[in-house]
Amino acid sequence: FDPRLAALLNRQGGVPADTPAVDTSEQIYISSLALLKMLKHGRAGVPMEVMGLMLGKFVDDYTVQVCDVFAMPQSGTGVSVEAVDHVFQTKMMDMLKQTGRPEDVVGWYHSHPGFGCWLSGVDINTQQSFEQLNQRAVAVVVDPIQSVKGKVVIDAFRSINTQMVVLGQEPRQTTSMIGHLNKPSIQALIHGLNRHYYSIAISYRKSELEEKMLMNLHKKGWTEGLKTSDFKEHDKANEATVKKMLELVKAYNKAVQEEDKKSAEKFQIDQVGKLDAKKHLQEDVETVMSDNIIQCLGTMLDTVVF
Figure 1 (cartoon, rainbow, N blue to C red):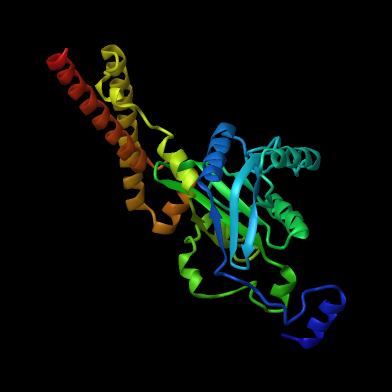
Figure 2: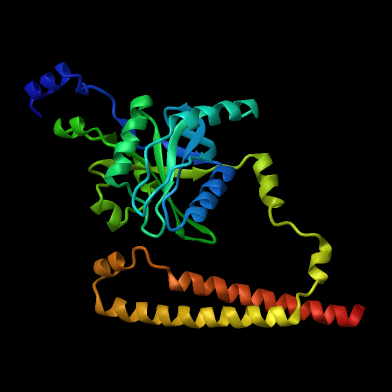
């Protein structure tokens, strides 16, 4: 790059040429509690976007730990959310400190219901305002509609300094960690991924208390296995699930036919924001099978024992 251009940017408060780039080995560790809260908040706000702040700490140069999150009272449209309410944030932080949650804000999260993980122009501006307070602030995007059992659609981003791009510098160093990043979607690449912002690897870490919380989340007593649901209600539930499965089969059959006619790239673009019929069909089949097996076994045991 031109050294005169670098000197000019340095005089204007730009990024010096020898500034170390952010290493891609940085990871964000999201706790189970924070993930559950983000998904619950996102699903409660469908079809609108919702946002909130993430609490945690910057452990070292390679680790950002997210312990907890709290929702912000923002009104949002389908594609953007309003700016942060600083008065509410201050009050909420004070109350959380009184309850033994002294962590600082490490970034923010918001939902993209049905249209994948990427940052819009408004989101990039919001992220840049967070980065003015802390350069390592993180923006997390979660999709509550595309997330199904066992698979959460989530990604974390940080904006790219345009002055570094002008100088021809990489926004971050490329290391072996690049293999652990999520494969970028076409939607994200269209909306400026690796041009205006880059992705950061997400990992999940559970403490002993969180493991106990998750183990007790849907825990039932031994007597629950002997209970049978009302036969009329069970019959209605079966009928409703089978009708739903029939619709999913039609949707899946249509998707397979479209896949044969279109190119792989065009088919992926067309599927953005749509329900994955195959995944939901598998989930419904497992639910129907398990419910009916439990009902039959429970009825047989009750007949023999009682």
